[in-house]
Image 1 (cartoon, helix red, strand yellow):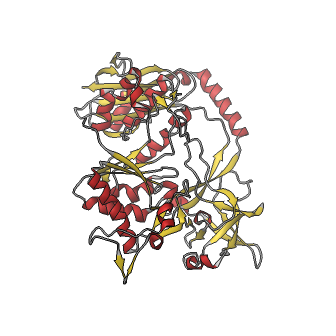
Image 2: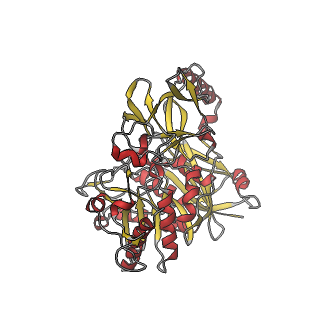
Image 3: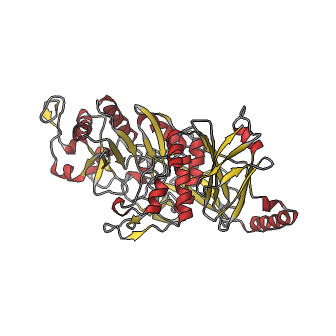
Length: 511
């Protein structure tokens, strides 16, 4: 039928194999892997303290510095190739669960295989463009968000993320045997089940028609891999028309210069009365604004990761604090108490050298709770906060090291902690726009209305010329894709009223 065959796999080795202590296969020589005069088994290569954060009882990392660890991974991916696999989605290796060693070695194996296999990474919580640059050349696609489900909040949360990755030139960067692409996760349309449920599908998508068009349009303008998340056996005609829209597929596959377009306005805002009212609202909001601490994880090479220092309280007690301003000078600094690691048993002594110079960071309100850097489950895009406090234990996601350059690195993920100030104000939504160039010279312009009411959105062709220097925008004609209306730009202004949570997509030919 011309279909491709993809599989979803976890990182490392299964707990089942480790408990059974199965021998490692040597695909180069045949039989069990032997080195240093002995046969190597699952327990020899497993790293139990690096269990998958959201599936801790199922899988754990393997030691890729060992020949046996590399032989194990090679045996897996050579088997997948022999099965005729076309795509591997490798889970629990990216974002909060970053395992760059395993990603690098799997990429090396896939690069050597005669069979091309698309290499995809997941999940995407806490991913930044700087982190993605470390893996983009090793893979073909990588998640940049948490799980995407059928609610407007999840769709809306992708706009800032896509903007940041576009600005960092990550769309279509060099990848494994080709290019690599930021992955915005599935399109949750049609007949679905519930998140976390093992039963179903049993319900229709909660997104309305405008929200589905908005999601499909953003995914295509950002050139995300497109993956349908519903049951194809019950594919309704409306959903089918959206996911197979020829213009959207053309944009996703062949457009270039894809980026957020900042030069858009809502013309109604700029009456004198509206300006005065807007100023009063803004002034009132500023008086009501409060700030809260939001702990995040980021790549340790990013400038925003540096800002931690040690403060000695007495001879026996030190704390680690964030020294940067958080937008409110009267706010107390964020600090956690530093505590030496106390290994629980003789069994832990083998990890003593790895943890030298590393600490627990305990809450100033309770010495029984430690700062926890990695989630225990997959997060949706609605759950933004990182770095919760949970009962102290020997998990690597609770172990930290302060570097001389002011970065605070976590032992589990290798990511560094950063602190932001979050203004506690109402999110009023707004308007957004994306643009791209077609392979025949056409210009794609998308308007997005993220607000809660129908809104007029406008753009000037003079501003399009700022983005596409050398192009002539004196006369532009085209169509709006979703309505099918013919478009003629009047007085250099492209304008349309867009439904709440909806979008307009223009295909323009200008001369």
